[in-house]
Amino acid sequence: MSQKTFAFFPEAAFGPALNSVGIAQAVTARGHKAVFLSDPGFVPVYEGYGFEAHPVALSEPMPAEEMAKFWENFINGHIPNFAKKPIDQIDTYVKDCWTAIVDSAKWAQKDLPDVLDRIRPDVIAVDNVILFPAIKQYGVPWVRVISCSENEIEDEAIPPHLSGMSEADTAGHAAFRARFNKVIKPIHDDFNAFLGDCGEDPYPLGQFFEASPYLNLLLYPEPLTYTRAHPLDPTRFQYLEGCVRKEAPYEVPTFAANNDGPLLYVSFGSLGAGDTDLLKRIIAALSKSRYRALVNVGDYIDSYDDLPPNVQIASWFPQPSVIPQVDAVIHHGGNNSFTECLYFGKPAIVMSYVWDGHDNGMRLQETGHGFRMDRYEWTEDELLAKIDAMLTDPAMKDRLTKISAHMQSKSGPEKAADLLVALAEGSK
Image (cartoon, rainbow, N blue to C red; front, side):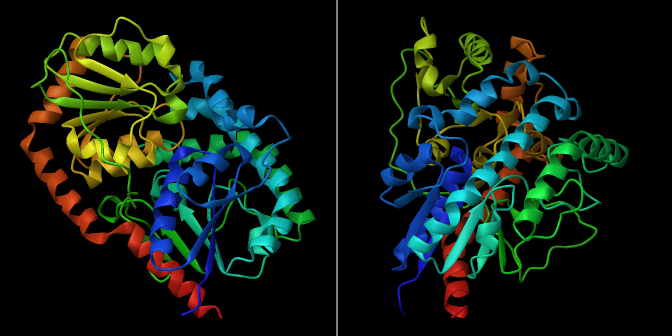
């Protein structure tokens, strides 16, 4: 068997990046070569895991440190919009986000042909929400990786992506789609013009990417999937059950108070850590509880002082090594946090703020694997009562035990690697 080269191109956020790292680790273990196409600011992330990384410009040139912070700064600029309902975020966050994403596809088209010619990959795996024409046109099999919610692949019978709506709210689905299409149309028209310049056919209104004709990998757990009007073809769509990467071991520190109390992990992800006022509110509430807590504060550790003795903070945690050791989690609904809690059978409270966090929070509650809470409208007593409820609910514990056993039995990264290798070997 000859060595194959697999190029991974995740978007510039830690969720997709680290999911691709997990798959790349499994590909490498099979004797093949994994390389990364990367936003310049994320090159050190992949190199830190021992992978070769090739920069691809996704925006106008800027200093590397500023580029690495692009999406973090973008998110922080939208903190006032976090309190809005998902449908009301369309005119603000969602609109601005899609504008930036379309711009990134245009910039990438300048670099990708030359980068691909240097790497000469046998398969390209793209974890993004938008088409990069150069990848589709390169002449080797390309794979779409969906690390966001499963409803990123649209179907009229399920809640629209980003809506945070329940499966039964069909009137809400229609209202969300109508508003999304109205607001997004000028951006979509611009993207279709770009596709035309690249020799691609236009997409229907609201669509920015297509399913791969070769293979589509969904990070979502299959037991929590929606009931679709058009079931996904299993020969082209495969679920990876969380696809949890390997991280260094983590030793839980000793706490000055409540050292025998239930242990919580609180994280709003690398992009949500800028919401320091909310994290401080949560810490203040936990200071009055019987719990211990590890809190991910990202790059804002200097914003915290006078911490209570039952709370410890850090700029980063090896999350897949931490979650197995805690009793419950409070997170933002990002797909890594969402799937890792399920993978390790841990109950969670989701306080979503943007994107698929809304969908994941609703799905977690709808299926009885945790709770969703408003991000800001709660009292300390309400938060502590909700934590106690998820720690003591026997039915929830049973559901989590079952979903964890299912997900862990599937070995998502290994499954992904096997599928990618088979695709590469079958294409020659």
